[in-house]
Image (cartoon, rainbow, N blue to C red; front, side):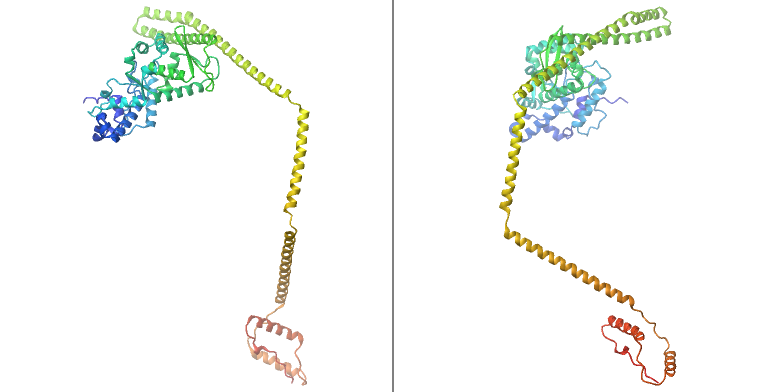
Length: 537
């Protein structure tokens, strides 16, 4: 079974655009826009908006750049993604992160241009589903008229920038990177007009570069000094892929834009390009001084020696590996040659490089210390000038007279407040209203006292009733009347026959209490319970 052919990154990107998955909609978008401009203005605006978004996003991902030096490792991989999924801004960030992951495999590779697109054979490159866009050139011309796209030749028309591009090529170690810079430096203006710049991407990339630079600086002398190659390497991650070099044309565009914004200056020093940033985002960039050139030269030398040490250490590790391989194969003379060279590097060459690096590091530290001392002295000088100005202002003042005036004004303010209080009290006072208020207050007070007396009388009456109820006793009911009659007859026989005897008060009291309690519990009095006199025998 033949392996499945892998699609190009641009084809995979187009497969993620939902508008291109419908044949009818793709036929409309890929049609000739010059005819729709007059026949269907609304459709023309819709198609132009589609091509504007597609071209800018594809350019930001480096899919429309044919800049020399672009390698396949830097291209985004869309094959693992679903073709039905639409590409959005968040997914573009994921693609850029994948570019950075692939870029770390080759730190010296050059990232594709993410700020430009080449109009050459653009329609053929954007073909999808067997259809070729017939109106993409019309869309590009319309975007140029809007100012969204600008020819590189118009942006980099300055001869100074073109000379900088030619000298930058001399210091680039990579053949492809150097060839790209030389090709651009020697290109004619007509050829430069085939490369278009996306102005919005350049502006946003310049802002990201400024933020990245000032976020990593500490205010030392060498923080704002770098070469053009360091600029392309240091800020590649801010606009494209970390771990790779920025495309030469992108570096030129960003440097030119930052120069226009007053963020940096450039100068040619010993065949290299010196880039100097402003000390802070709020200050304009200062001119490149002799101290800056000297510090740049020292820092460049330090970086060169550090790279040489790294190369020598890698060389010794490689020679040790070759020595072991030669011994395994039985090539003793070759193994001895590798070992002699490795020992020569370790004993004679590498120690000198390390010693030179230590000395140059001391020089760099001394330069930074001197720069810090100068900044400290400038701060003291500025503080002294400020204090001198304040002292001059203070000499024109008499503290005693100032405080005397303050006391007089405070006294006058107090007298004025007292006068205002008296006048306000006199204006607000009303005798009639005060008498009415007093009478109303007395009436409220009498009402409150009457309420308190009524509550006290009610409480006393409730207490008397409660005490009366406590004294009430209820006699048990008689179950058999015969014994009661026998007792009464025996008592009548025992008492002499005389006048009727009135009931004793102690005997009548419980009966009266019972009668009062029964009367209180019933609505009608019971006349049957009246007291009868006891007849005498």
